[in-house]
Length: 315
Image (cartoon, rainbow, N blue to C red; front, side, top):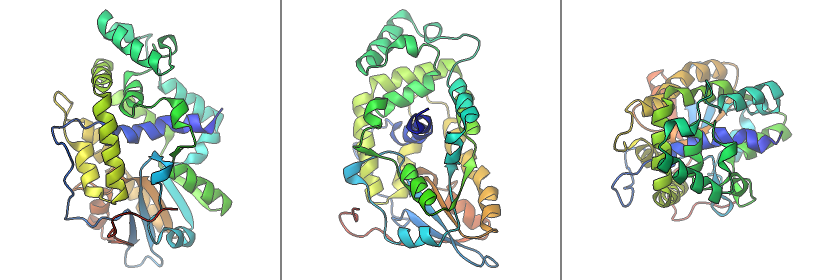
């Protein structure tokens, strides 16, 4: 099974957060209270060596890919590299089969059961144009299809050499350096997040995603620009700005609760040596962000380098 395909759903889960906003703002105003930094040092009394937290964007055009200053040294100093999930799981066929089964709706439910004939035709035409015939997708959970629509990109385009994944690049680098790799969550848990929202609500989100694909492309472009400026606060503001009719639990399920779950896991890992954590940049800032939660647990977090130039360093 193609390792890229197995990473697709995990990538989409986070990419969805960063382009799902459809607010009235024509541009995102930069936030000033948090330094523009993607790479942070984590220290605590009694902890011999610092660990590091790097905010990623799960998909980025190759021409926009860069590494912040100080990342190479931080990575090399770390004993373990930890992602949102342990990417080694992707080599386990049992885990992969479980993930694929979790993409499907239960009890034989299909999209036709959740949409009117007119709505189903609209959805079908959209995915046909993407080269994804509906007979292959009729049992897939609508939230996963929403993610494909939100990023407005088919799997073939996402697999092209024009799109880069920070996680996969760092994972390959960790393997070459023979570093231990770990995860803050299991793939099974991430996929279970699909079940936190009813199928009917997921179907409505799918329709909304398809109707707003042009806006979402603009929003993704804005997200990439914010990332290049390392503006992690504006990124979380964009990701959590509510849409009309959206379930208020959405932010808690996909961001806040996960952040809180990660802190004790991170603390335990850091007791065993320096760790390089790489998670979506949308998880870093905010009152319930990982940086704030670490501070509440007595950790000192400081930016390794702060964005200042007009154009970030390219690699």
